[in-house]
Figure 1 (cartoon, helix red, strand yellow):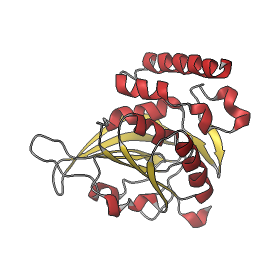
Figure 2 (cartoon, rainbow, N blue to C red):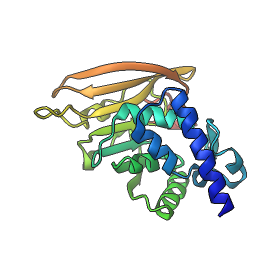
Figure 3 (cartoon, rainbow, N blue to C red):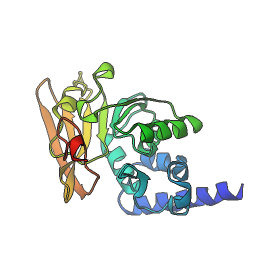
Figure 4 (cartoon, helix red, strand yellow):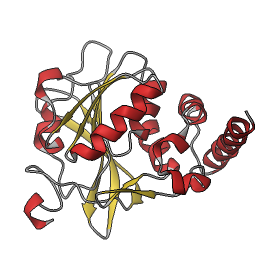
Length: 227
């Protein structure tokens, strides 16, 4: 009981810090407050789980810092019932936040050990996602189109298959949104790309970040054979 209270207080302080840094979407802040991030980090690092920092999870990957997760979630503008594709499951933390926002989450990870661990944690916490091992730069055509797609690694270019799998606009409903960091390994600009027609997209650039490289056939910073 004391440990649960400790983590609850730490999450509350984290939410206050994120709000002070500009995260003003109340739904996103509530989701961050609800997800037990300490469950997604290695036991030896749990004392750092609610600091606003990235932490290693193996396979040269990290659990993104909470600000980054909140920022991408805010740009995605998730509505309850939205079909959202996550490229790069990693620890599973971003998927849990999307679930708290009411999304139907489909997630792809290229490292099976990471995916297996993430799915185990998500299931233990009663977050339901559909997952697979694969090349996330190709998207997941079987469940397209998506209301939102979020990429949790740095792309050199926007993967064309992801654009094609965004939902088309209908009547007064905007098209699907893709949130992806684009740039070089030295730093990326967070992009939000909204589908406005069969072959048209609106592109917006936001803050700079630094992500681990996206690996894949379309738009990755490096290819799998490069290690």
